[in-house]
Amino acid sequence: MKNDALAAARALTPIILRTRNETEAGRLLAKPIVDGLRNSGLCRMALVKEIEGLEVPTPAMLDVYETLSYGEASVGWIVWNNAFTCFFGRYLAPQVRSEIFRDPQWLYAGSSRPTGKAIADGAGYRIDGRWSLVSGCELAEWIMLLCTVEENGQPRLTAQREPEARFAFVRRGDVEILDTWHVGGLRGTGSHDVVVKNVRVPQSHTFSLAEPITVDAPLGHIPIICSMAAGYGAQTLGIAQCAVDTIVDLTKTKVSADSGVGLRERPDVLEAIVRHGAALAAGRAYLRTRVEALWSTVTSGAPASLEEISATWGAALHGADVALRAVVAMYAAGGTTSLYTDCPLERAHRDIHAMLRHIVAQPFWLWDAGRVKVGLAPTHPLYAI
Image (cartoon, rainbow, N blue to C red):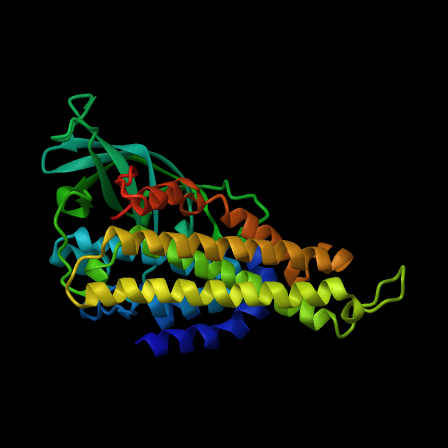
């Protein structure tokens, strides 16, 4: 399935490029792209085959994310966000997982911001709240939302005396979407706010990360958050590679109006192409090496170690760092050409800066990776999930 997924991503690329303006204008992926995602199953890479998932090894997912993001960052972002929800399906009972993921045409969205409430109500919960930045919510059949549990008007506490948090799967028809996604970068992701008002959800359609995993396959045991970080890094590398390739193409035609010197005759540009191209290749190779090591461990039946998880975090955010540097350098090298919205450099620049705002890009993950490196325990509760 891993080769099928990459082939599907490559086959979708011409459609992505042809409809980029439609995606931008609509602030949502163009319909031909959405149809391609539904029919290819690319948004089901992190689901096992028993429920018509592609069951793609996590190292192979990196190639898919990079390929899609090379063509349009918003497409890679939506596929990656669907993987997030699919990964967490491991906590559902098998029959519920089969229900929520039963239709191969369905897409998913989610939020890990605990900005809503799950009010205990008999054998279920009443979900109420508002969540922001829910990428792909307009396309989704189910939306997974993180809530703080309340009982008798008070937060319910865990055995550790912490407020209990649960994710709840809510049908798209029970969600109100607020038109809030008016942005520059990642414009096509449709990352609007969503509101749920007093919607009852059965207990079975909710889960806590403290509950047992019910998927006995590598995709059920691979650490989720660092794997998502690796996918994030791969997307940034795809954007940056597109930026470098764009400058290489521009050297064939671009001449400075002031000096009359061609771009291909400027030593600083030539050096930047080689330096940043090499940095991207090295970042890509190291990221792949660390994710392959993680995958190899879980496929052997052993749990991933904190050292392996930390190395994956380091490789993921290192890849994103070299990608950012490459995009900034290529944007500068493009001169005034980089300003125009029909130039891939313009989109690469705003897309990668938008991606930097995501939680997986924040430095506290590396602080915990450093703690592990010097023999201390990580502090973030989701570090090794």
